[in-house]
Length: 398
Image (cartoon, helix red, strand yellow):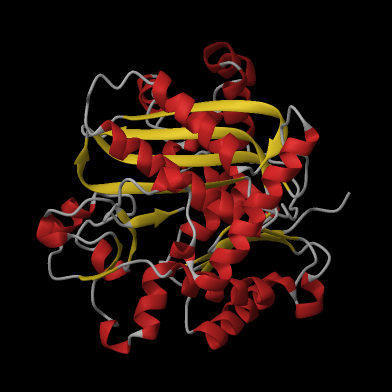
């Protein structure tokens, strides 16, 4: 069997780079994409930021108030999802021309299996540089590429020389490439596992590789086997087109911590309504319904329920979310964020039902509501349960 050649591409500071490209006056300046900082009193988090902002210590997922403390002079921008998706489609269309084996793993990164196509471009390096140049010509943006015998190695390689990087790991150089890297770069090693590994004297991937598979399995179970394989550069996962998202969700961060029960329930109704409308638009059905709650102290909880049959019915999803919320012991603590999500998605399916006629009738009603909103606007028709309260908070979509 011939050696695989996997390419991983990651756009550099994607959202912020688009904003700088669309606004030339922001080039060279710190740009932070996320929630409104409100002079350091804003809610929400940083979505992404330019490399100029990172020099001040700003990072993705950082509270926006902290970002303001570190870099108050930055240009703060609310995310433009449609624009980012437009550029993403352009990038993925370019990649699709270089290999039929394309796996998009997020809006700004993807894997390509170029095992059978790199020779058409006089080798892997020429192919990679051509891809980078074509993307730059089409979008004005830089990208970083890693090329290696598998997905794990290619992903690490693409991250090593950002921005505008290109790192190639030859099959006979895998161990030399991995050994000096810090152990935190290993997939699956998070904040909980890292201290355990460090107490074992493991600081680098090379340190971990010196342990036998049995030793790691005895200490960490199946995860130990996973760590051992990656430390030896083993990853046999194929590049494949996932076809569709694994989950879909909606979240809302309150401008002020909310403790009013009616307002919280009303927010959940809005989120369910917006989420299921999008699911029907994309013809998606899901089996697992999840409630997300972040309290005033940033502690975050999720509660889920899984059904045998997939659904996108607003009434069922809303009822499930309401039951999960009622069962959650909040103890009158104020809420910072609420979210609803649906996972285990399918492109088509039958909704969970007791009586087929009743379900089909509900489907027709919901689709008619969707059509009215599309023609006359979201406020043209709404559910009676949504009329009691209005929210001034900003929608944050995942």
